[in-house]
Figure 1: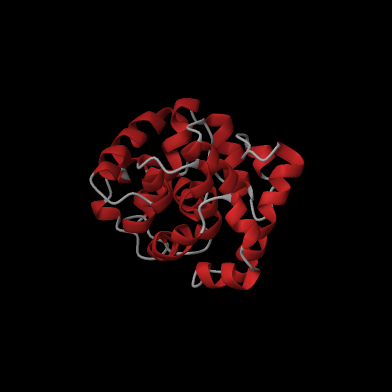
Figure 2 (figure 1 turned 90 degrees about the vertical axis):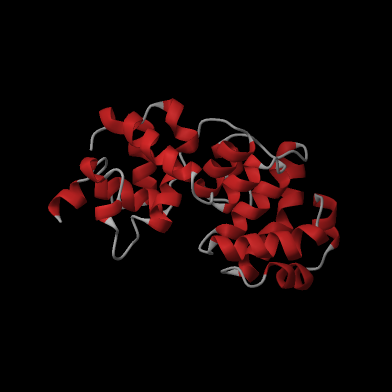
Amino acid sequence: MTFADADKVHEILSRDFADNPAPVIDLMGAQGASPFHILLATILSARTRDACTAKVVREKLFPAVRSWDDIRRISIARLDELVTPVGFHRQKAEAIKKIPDALDSMFGGKIPETVDELCKLPGVGRKTANLVVAVAFKKPAVCVDVHVHRICNRLGLVRTNTPAETEIALRAGLPKRLWRTWNAIFVSHGQRVCRPRGPLCRSCGISRFCDFAKRG
């Protein structure tokens, strides 16, 4: 695959995406969740299955925490309890606890809308920042998680060793109009079809573009 094929691949995966469950963060965005909720859910979703993240935020965290003032008042122990069993829940609870003061000191209490500014917040890396920009603020951002990194390399679209390198390559070659939705459709595809092990190449709608499928 080359970047000249990006529009067609995006079109095919977008149709497939519409017929299947969306990743939890994108679903929240489609349902009109606030930047506050999307930021917290995105932090919790790192290295955690969608079903677990969705259950934690909907049944435990969000009923108890509705604002940054709630985060300030709640104890670390209680916050940790609310975000268990997501992966690395203690570290994430500690990071979330620090965010209100960080927002006040750096951004006047408001969640920033750029990737570089979001990365200054506790617990926020580039993947989280890009996803928040794209989903919460509807701005162009290339979020690269393990699915996007794996599939783009399998396709032959990039030749990279890390998600950070993949982000740089996609920002350089991918049409900007495709940035915001690229992550969602590739995550959905990676969870169901282009799996880490045993990818379903024979039933893949974009196999004709894929170097990995052609080698198989």
